[in-house]
Image (cartoon, rainbow, N blue to C red; front, top):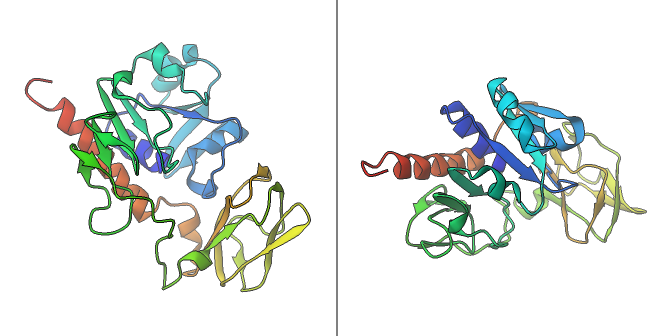
Length: 254
């Protein structure tokens, strides 16, 4: 979701963007995740390029080159260093891990457990449905349901999860066509099989994971382009974030 937001803002002319990441990002939809820059040094999504930086000193030059910055900073200490105009918490942790509206003139929380205007200025709804992408200025988003969105009638069946803690080892690659019952990867010595056929739209890197971690995403529509384009949900949430920014900074008194 964070990549979808960064991409939308960049395309809308808000180009001075830096994204913070953990040491080993857990992205599943790696074909459309700027956090891949942590591993590869750079990542391009739908024509927008992100590059890993090691310090704030690199930002001005990077922005002048037309790229989004990505920095490993799990505690987002960079916020206190650069004093941004906007902070968007799009961790999708299903809870507020400590984001507060004192961090910037505009602080936006995506998903459950953020409350506006108490701890953030605005909340963007992340649950699929009628309110997806809605900006909330008084209250909070809907509770986390734990249920993936339906694609061709499939919900939980689309998602691959870790049966135990351990090291991921791939059998299939991102974008591969898969059939029901095929082994997609191993966690330790334990295989994880596809519950449906389709295309492997998402696949976590070969890293250590906890039990229950999301490892992959099978798209039954089997269209390769879906592996490398931003989803409808991410675009809707991104639109909400852009709306909140424009609402705040386009006010006469802003």
